[in-house]
Structure formats: C-alpha cells, structure tokens
Length: 251
Length: 212
Image (spheres, chains in turn red, yellow):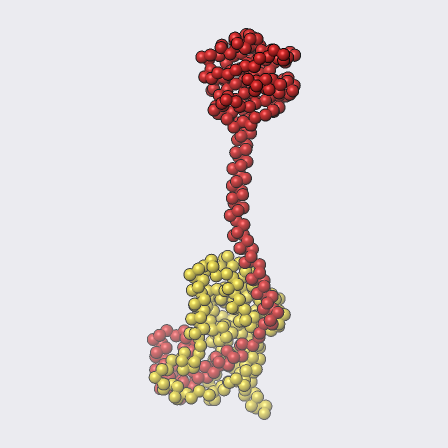
C-alpha cells in the first residue's frame, strides 16, 4: 500500500519536517498526510529520527574551568585594550600636534634669530672692511646724534664716555630687513664694536630674547628700550661688550 | 507515542506544531541576535556574540574529535581565531555560520581532521536506496545511547551535517554557508546521512532482536 505519489520522493518528507519545503509544497503534503496512512507513518518515523538525533546529539558539556578560560580569553584582552586605545588616542594626538607646532615654531624662531645675528655680523664686518666705515666721523656724541636727524625715523641718546675706555668712532645708516637704523662704531683697545639701533617693531627683531650671545666668535648683547632694539656686537671680550651695553642702557 | 490519527486529522496540522518541532523558535531567537548586530555593527563585541555559542560549539567539537582534550583545543583555537579575525566579520551576516566555519576549518587542518575527512569525496555517489521496511523504526529516549553510538560511528561528513540540522537546527542555507557547499549538496548529503543512520539503526535493532 505504498503511496505512489510521495513515496517516490521520500526526501520531500525530510525537507517538509526541516521546514524547508516551499509553502505550496508544504500545503500539498500536509493535505495528503491527512488522507494517506502510509505516508503519515513514514513522516512519523522521520520525526522520531529527528527527535532521537536531537536528543542524542546534545551529549557533551564543556567543563566549568574550560568555559571560564575561554570567557577570560575573549573578555579580558580585547575590551580594556580597545578602551585604553580609545582613551589614549585623543591625548596622544593632541600631544603629537602640540609637539609638532612647538618644534616648528621654535625652529622658525631660532632660524629668524640666527638670520638677524648673521646679518648684523655681516654688517659689522663689511663696514669695518670698507674704506669709509663711517659716514659721520666724530668722537663727539653731540655731533653724531644730530647727523642721524632726518635719516632714520627715530631719535636716540648716546652715553657720555668720559671716564670709560670706549671711544666713539662715528656712525652711518644701516638697514636690517628693509628697516633703516643707526649703526655706531665704538673702539676699545683696538677692537671695534658695532652698536645697532632699530625700531623694535621691525620683523624678526620683535621676538628676539634680550641678553648676551656668541655667534661665529662675535660677542653680542641685545635689549629693547623705549621701543628701540639695541644690538652690541664685536670681537671684543664679553666683558667689554657688556660694559658698553651697560653704558648705553644707562642713557 | 504520538497518536497519529488524531494529530494528522487535527485542523492545525503543521509540521511545526503537530510534532512540536522547535525550529522556528530557535531561528527567531537567532535572528534577533543577528539583527542586534545589524543595528549596531560596531557595538556588539566578539564576546557578546560568541559566548552564547560556547556550549553548542563545544558539543559539536567533541562530536567531531571524539575526545575531550582535543575538543577543548579545537574550541580554544576557534575562539582565538575568531577574536583575531573579528574585524573581518561582516556585521549582519550569519555569525554562527562564521564561527562553525572557523571550527570546521581548524578541525580539517588538525591531525585528527586530516585523517577522518580524507574520504569526503562522496558527492558523486548515488544515494543508498531507501529500504522499505514493513515495521517502522521505533526510536525513543531509551534508545539514546544506541543513537549516540551509531552517530559516532558515522563518517564525519554525515555526523556533522546531522548535528547541524538536528541539534543546532540550522537552515539549509546556514549549513551551506557553514560547510561551504551548495544548497543542493546540503540536501543530498543530508538525505544520505539520514539514510545511513537509519540503516545502521535498523541493523542494530534487528540484530539485537535476533540476538535475544
């Protein structure tokens, strides 16, 4: 009493029980099963098989220690590390950017300062090497100071040198970064010392730190006063440079 | 035993309710889990997705290897690989199939796996003929041990597909993804696995009957 229509394709029963038969096929078979005892018996046997395998298949249980071990291995590692990365990411980036900006700013500063000093050293050397180092030749500050009138856009005072070892040689107009300023030459024991005075607002001079420096064996001193930037530079000793600086600061 | 006539004549006849097969329930639970990962792809961590699978993965690994310590090694390797490769997992796709695939590949490259899966070129063979027996095969809870023994002695390819279908209750599509085979092959291999198990059980039952 085998059913001809369905028993020819018994795997349809499995597909039906697996819930994989399409809706129309499932409806068909369902209708058929109500009428056909032989197919219903077959289907029932397959259901029993499924249940038996389901029950038999759930057989092995992991030990509690092993579960804990795996849980630790997937939980402990990735999470804190990811969290740490997420937290550390922003400050690290900020630090990096700050360091970059700072170093590039400092680098620019240093380069600008270096440029100013080398230009002044050049001016100093070139002036001394020229046949006419100064345009106003006078050891009298009262002659030199008025000479600059109308040649530079500011006025300055020069110190009284009586009682010191310094002598004024003269002065000329100098240019630094397209700005005109006063270039005075002093002498002490055969050493010539240049004193430059520029308006403070000009270019790289604005950010120069005050104080003594030594570049290419020239000693120098710089400071600002009344909106003017003073430079003292020469091959004289640091003490002499400082002493002249002190005189000039005093006026 | 189920009252056949009454059940079949019931107006609510449907494979899912007459035989109270929990397939739909199981799937919907899984789809819920999957849809969580679809909504927040980055938020669902590996741990959240993988730990609920721990028991079934272990059970499956033990069935494959037939040895506790080998099964533990296999599961451990699976979780380690899964964790490492989690970034390559596409949220919204089937995570369970992905994990089973990792486990299976790890098993295949293991020593035991290489031995047992060597003869898995079974797709071209024809299906063993369905043996029509006059008596139906009576299997119930008391036969559990017998079914377990026969399941364990099946070829690994049959064992794993039966476990996927009946224990893990995977859909054919999910099995195709897990086993990396076409859905047609899933159906034919499943039929052959069932036939093989049925034949083995029949022999056993009949042999036992004759032996008594």
